[in-house]
Each structure stands twice: as structure tokens, then as C-alpha cells.
Image (cartoon, rainbow, N blue to C red; front, side):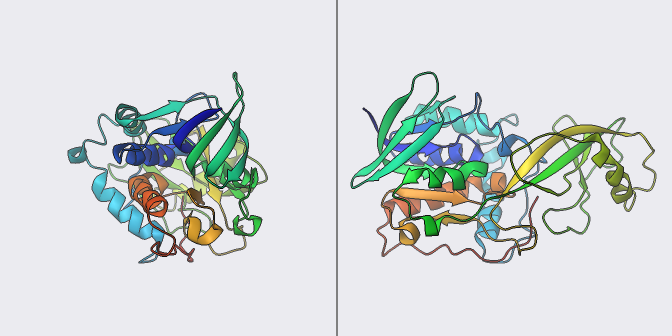
Length: 318
């Protein structure tokens, strides 16, 4: 039986930010990631934009963490260094007492009186016992929670997947700034962003899907031309090439109002030492460090002291 103080499941940007915060606070932390690299899914399939919090209701968890995160994600903090945000989180956490282990899927779990037992797959299956557990698995947060015996099922929200694809522009970028149209339900519209190399790309669109699938259908580009020409009429035919896809980990469906992030601690589910993060879509990257602070607050305060972080309606995010 392997024992560790804290386990964070998921090595996306939020999981790594949480591991960093826990390690800097003096905890021994193990990060378990099912993929072969960090940030493989939602964290690396985005617009590469640090958001300002414009789209989210004042006082919502999205708005508060987005605004606070924007202020902290600046070169002066030392967190962003040569664009290596997630790598900085990983390296700093490791130095402070956290370890990231890749290709280690969590198959199931069990709540104990004094913590958790986790059945781990991969090349060397094992069981890990921990006192604190953070579910930061993004697209798989609901499924992971359901696999842990002892988490009340009525506290686990439904999961919905909303794919957005990007198309890249061949040739020089027409703008020096980002352009955002009025957002449709489910996303922020087909906007133009500039990647770290200065290449222009457009997206993401909105497509509700039944399961995780990163396929980019070139035919979806047909609708991009009409959307882009509402603010750039000079776009020439054939100028767009298929890029990549990202999937928003939604907890509200296509006919429902978008909801706030859910950061669920013991005051909601009643399990000591457990924090589940649900629906962490955009602006999750921008909000990652304040979200990590909220996780620590849930883990360290007594249930009577913990503020209830209730889901509120929020504008749809990309």
C-alpha cells in the first residue's frame, strides 16, 4: 500500500496550479495523470487568451477567479516565463514537494474514515492511500466522482461535451488585436486570435457531442467564412485550413442556461478531505491560480467555516 498526504487527479493547468499551491503550503502532493503528458486535453486546446472577466456575472466564481487570475498571470509574477505556463506550474510544484506521474489512470476509489483508497491502472497497477483528494479531471470529473464509492451520487452534476474547432488562416494576420463577435449560446463566437507565433486562427464554434472526440471536420469551415465576413469582409475563399479541436467540460446542457464553476467541498458532499471541480471550462486557465486557492480553503477550513460556493447562472464561455 502506497501512502501520500494529498493526491490531485488531473495534470491540466488547474490540477497543476492546485498541486503547486498545496506543495508551497507544505503538503506532500502526488499528481496522477492518465495521459502521457501534462495539459493534454482542455488545457492545451484553447485560444491562448488570458481573459479579462467581461462575460461573467459580477460575484460569480468565474468572474472573481478570472479577474484575480488575470492580475496574477503576468511576467512580473514569475509564473509565465517564455509562455511555459503549465511547465512552470509543474517544475515549481516538484521543487516544493509535489510529483507528477503520467500514464496513471485512476480506475476506482473508496472513501475511508481517514481518507481515500485509489485503485491505479497503467504499467504498474497499485493502490494509493491519501488523506486529501482533489478531482481536477476536467472532462472526466463527473465520471471520476462516480467511480469513487462513498461520494453521494446526488451531489454529482451531469456531464455534457461541447466541441469547438479552430481554423487557421493561411497568410499574414489581418489584425493586430483580438476580435470577438457577440457570443452565441455555448461559446464566445468565431473570433480571431493570434497564437504565440503570431499566426491568426478563428474559432471555436459550438457543437454538442455525445463523447470526447477531437476530430476536426473540414466541412465545418464553410460556416466560418460567413461568420468571419461579418467583421472581415475581405476574407478570400480557400484561406482557412483545419486546425484543432477543444472540448468544453459542460455541466449544463444545450437547452439550459450556462452555470458557474462548481468547486465542491465537504460542506456540499459531506466527505472530509475531498474537493471536486466541475465545469471548469473557459476561463479556467486564467482562473487556475485563484481556483487553487479556493481548493486549499476548502481543504483547510472546518465545514462550519467554509463558504458555500453555489452554482449561479453565468454567460456561456469558450
